[in-house]
Length: 637
Image (tube, rainbow, N blue to C red; front, side, top):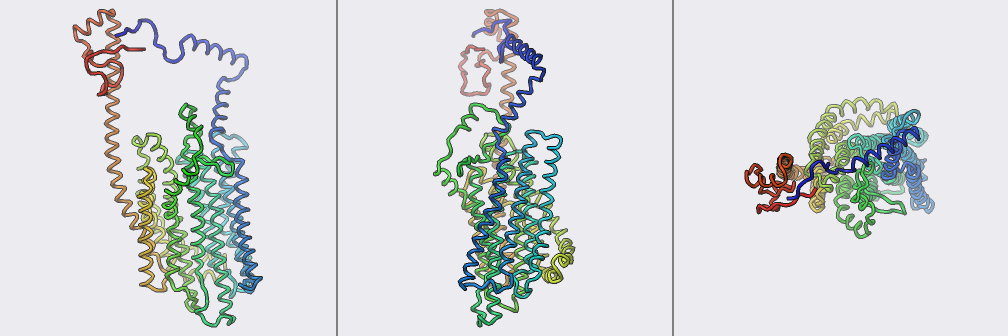
């Protein structure tokens, strides 16, 4: 066994004389330049952070421009198509005394407001990221805070402003024939006040719970895309409502004699069609969130390229950065595997609405038309509140999902319990709190808001809200229960996504949809023309959540078993280090007390070193593949 020379320090890093030379050199530079030598290092580190983490701050104006111009262009295309139909006599929207104008310009106004608001929100999110990197001080910090406050204030004021503008636009229209109704303004109020708050919550929860900048950047682009996609929902809703008003006008003017000849389309159908189209776009976008691609010459990095602002440029990270872009075949395969499940998950409610409208008797009934309209509006409010209440735990789960996927791929999955923090937040802690809040405060809020609706939209709206009051109570109560019902379903989707098991998640989403279809069909045939379809929508979620709970229990037991194995392995490694440290100490003591020959004789003769027959290479004491034949190896320092 080779000996270790005495008096010679082991080289760990740079030699002492090299360190001294570096210290002297740095002292001379500090004296000459009269500055802290760490300034350059900090500046280089900050610049490297900015290079590694593209902020897209300058792109905010571009995305804001897209989010305003593209929806407006689509809206004007619709307007041109409707104008052509009116000019050729196929439809007669112009006979509705301004209904066509309202159906066109109010959606444009809504899109314009929301686009500007989302642009401010994304700019605030980017400034939030930028402030963490640059540490703004002075006037810049003040501007940053004011931008955040302005974005939140804009979101809070958007709904009431839009409702008041809707009233002013329609104040001079014929109330009997106009497509404007107070319930339309209420609908605009709800969607315009709810979506921005949900988006703001998602952004700031992602920032303060994860502190990962790349997620904020992708979230801002995702929100811009949602603002572009949502225009299809609102415009389809109003255009279908204008079509129904046109049919009503033709019936009232005796152009259509038989009520059976009236073609009535539920406005919910238009909302459902717009939702399906927007969810299609968003589902495709989600695929790109997890894939590195180049779109229109702009390189897009998926969020799995993690820790972009803190990573060290090692050989492995450089190899990861220099890897080629995925081929189109790989992107298509990923879309094929994950797109159906994603689309079914987020298109569940619109598909349910379409099925319900197909089952319902959609003929025009002048006597029951008002009652059906109340029920449909209540169901529409229920759908919005259902998605809003469900979005709160889902936003938290989505925020943690990326972190969990990264820990899985980086080999740290068994050493973290973050996934089960998600499950606790998602199914045990937050949903019951939201449910209690909804059960306790939904009815008082409706009671408080109902009289004030008359102040905003007139006495007609107040009377209609009173008639809708029982249905609204039931809708909000059901929406308050939605997080508990949908929580386990989203949890199983997270688990399947972590393990890249796309087939179980797809089968579960298909089963959820099939159960919903069967329940809707049975419910529709039993109740006939009733539009109270809340129980039928719940059946699919209940089925999926039961399966999700069972799978979560199985996965928890599996994780516990693997975690116990990992813990035992960690204990063995700790004992391994202790034993090797003890071996090293005994070996150094024996060498310092005796000469090379005496120490070797002492070890063989006296047997003081009980590890003399082990493989003393400072390796693993529990390594069964090591040399256990009694031979010794040389120690190379």
